[in-house]
Length: 488
Image (tube, rainbow, N blue to C red):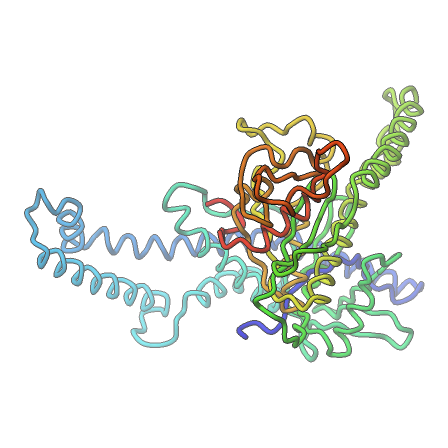
């Protein structure tokens, strides 16, 4: 396998380590914060220097093309072959010559970046590093500069074609960007553990960032402990300062894939809906499935939080009319408004974990889901009334993303299929007709020859129907209409 691990990012609050209460320790603490501010105040400048230099390197090659009469003539001839009466052989020869000129321009570019030396290693990234090293090495550690140079250069290359097409502009960086660095067991920057059990990041310039796990609902301490023990790897990480001056470690953890022998022919179809957030079914099983979550539970929690919010707003109505301390009085309301979103985020974690466990329990090697671009919207891309309350905070894209990375860690492939008629087709006979899903929970097949797709018959001759979510999930599991996750 090309990648034998999956990467996750853990956000952990960090504080600069205090070395005591003496005057000398306090002075050292202040000096370390000054050094950290110095890094933050110069990092975005270094990032913009890198982007500018990358653009200059491209502009140098562009000017070589511009001042080459032969290249310009070839471009003019090839721009309109019919008008210039070019035969197929002529076009082939001109394109071959243009290719040689391209190669020559790139060679001249590399010679320029090597300071006039014709042979040697590729100096593209090295040239941008030299620029920022000469200007910022006194205030920004070399490991940070190296990592920053790699990140910005790759970002610039990623967007070069879009810049040429006019889709976007050259990246521009503002103050407050994350401070990137490599974490290595025996490097200058490393995760360490003290004798008292506290875990910290050893940073250049003598800085030590203590990790504060708080209530640790995300189980971050156990993950970091596994990194320290060598069970998990760690990638290039960063420290970012929030608007309220708190610092957070964005730790990239590499979790090895589990070596399981799963059946790639067995597929779990996952239907995402409103009444039941997820419903899972197998492609080779006509009976059973698993529903995860419920609309009632979601609405119950939302109503309770909305009631708390209304009560708090009522109490704050007269106490926040101007004056000093208004923002402090509103802090309780701000905290409450974030709680509902945090709860939905937690539910998505629980639901995605349940899907992975269901797939592993049934030895399924593939999970299939619908591409839900525009879910809950009408033809005018407006959110339908029945979905407005549910979709206010609920993120199906986030849920699918969680399923993706957890499936990757478990060695399960994730595929997306076209959602067309997955809920209107009978999985038992294949009959497709509009109106067969008569409501959210019920599906009744209109094929007169299909008996299983109608469910049990009542005493009055009508049919009870079958579980519509199961029917859609099994259609998804058996579909081969594969698409990308996002529309292009």
